[in-house]
Image (cartoon, rainbow, N blue to C red; front, side, top):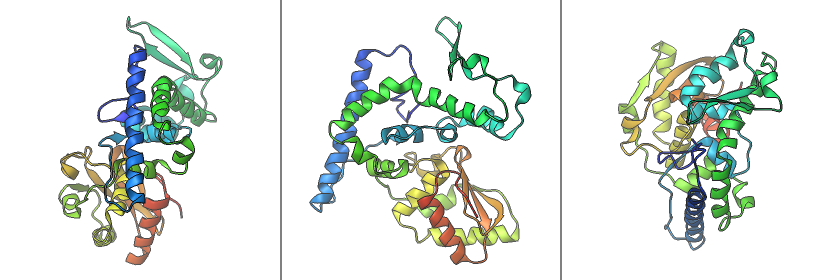
Length: 296
């Protein structure tokens, strides 16, 4: 699934030419919203046309010409990521007898074998090539199976917005451009979050966290939400309806950048020397990092 919420774009072998015209029309609507918003900004007006939808990372990536990879499963298919992708990534898989293919059930419940690479069903997945296998799986499930829908959507979008203009943005910037920023309530987040960890040092960092985000702009809050959940948009009911709950955990490192596990809506906070160091590291992570980003 590549467009969340209304399930606009999804793998479906029964799609028709009429369906593809709907995707093309949807692309034109999004293009018109972007055009009208840009025109309003040119004339210094506050008027903006925003798209009220939750877009997935892999869908946004393909709109700007990026190649999808297996890390997109964490936000776009959290269940598959938790049950299969993460296990393969982190464990010895020599005994799993995987090959570079994917099995699908047709309408009659017959099994159809799809090669992810030429002669993939005869190519074993090993610990050495397992990340290549996961990338091939992402290409198939998040790109190839919906290629026609995405191409139709882009055909409509590019009638108003050329693809060279879209490619100057990353996925997060494009989402903010299309969907805008709502008013984010720190009080709402304080009321509707989960904390794991209770050490003295972590409680100190947590206190600093609330102090820091208390001065955040709406754009900074949107980027914090993107970093932690993979999407800048909240459900209509705000943080109370976010599933799973926004979770804050200790990072068990020192003076590194915060990290995030978007499939759990989990923000991991390392320990720091000072609130100033923490503030700087948090801003770098949410502005420059991708989901799960972190370095010394």
